[in-house]
Length: 259
Image (cartoon, rainbow, N blue to C red):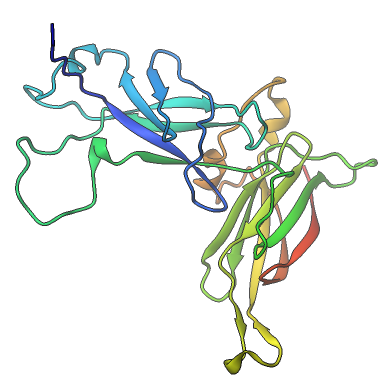
């Protein structure tokens, strides 16, 4: 017997590589207490259910007022160590489009059909692209001998001319991070003769550290957005350095922070 079963999802999110912006496939294992979240083969995490939302999941065409989305936390831990572990906040249930669809010109998907993006940060040993400007960064505690790496610090590369954020990274438990700027130009002279022209970009790299991380228990998983969305927090400690970036460059830099 053929039976139709309609089931509505509450939303979706996708992990994207913080350097390349590409979706991460295969999906990183996820945990979300009290929520039903399942990744598919495309690396999209489908939110099927959550606390007090069970009645919405069997309504393909919902009746009544669709509730406002709520934020909940997921934890991502990559057993292959391609990416650093992180927590992230996502929302559900997401808005739904009109039904039946209104015939209009094609528009980008919205609401439940537009997966939320969660940036994940490659581990310090990740494979490097051939034309990346790459920085191997160490963030340490000032005045400690031997050096003590500061875990889960967040780093940003900011272009000096217009304050554009060129790259973001995070340290691992040992205070090591990989930063990479993609898209810097390399251009040959007209006619293909003579030296190759390589653009140089003046930038500033800043490492931010939250001292409260040092009091967290072993195995604690950070949410880098706690720092990135609150960079003016006076509790944060930081260290900055100027740098000239070129395509294909690879360098090592150290940032000492007083905690």
